[in-house]
Amino acid sequence: MSQKRRKKFEEIVERFVELKDTSELMMDLAYSSLLLNSKELAEDVQELEEHVDKLHTDFELLVLSSGFKPEEAKGFLGLIRLGVVTEKIADAAAEIAEVVLRGIKPHPVLKLAIEEAEETVTYVQVTENSLITNKTLRNAQIPEETGMWVLAIRRRGKYIRPKPHTRIESGDVLIASGYAEGEEDLKKLASP
Image (cartoon, rainbow, N blue to C red; front, side, top):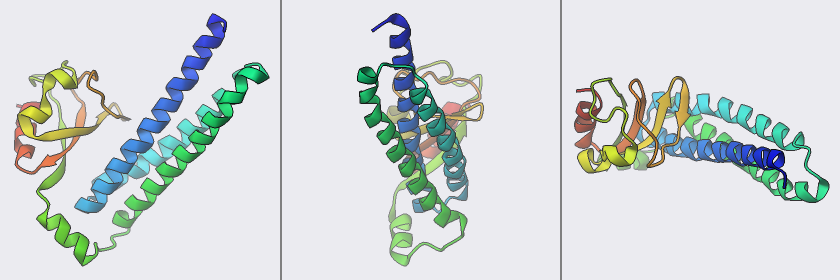
């Protein structure tokens, strides 16, 4: 495979990974919005659904216009199908969030489960003087310090599904889940 084709192939893979990661993030946020009856999280899911629609279209156009030879392109058919399924997962997450946005009251069993749960989801903005600014998630040790796990990072209007090597920047909004007692610790860590 030529250097140009390899580069195009890597771009296709990169776009697919972004599509997959975003739909997974949407499911996490959708279930959290339902469990916590959080309109803010549900609105984030709806916003992401529109983003996934665009990602999916861009991904398919990239694959279809890639110019690979027929024998090279056969493998992309499976990727296109996975892209369609991934977009359906994003749609399902949006439907879960829609329950919250419509104001439908949680079933009594779900309401009891929520009240009994010791977990919460919170948003915190990272300030310039934070000890975690410019650190990777691994080095920031947020779960060890707070008991909270970062589900997503909202950065300049985009959502990032964090990985251990993801660097935290000043101005990032961390969307985290974990034990309620850790919420205050996370706020102090992110914006002292």
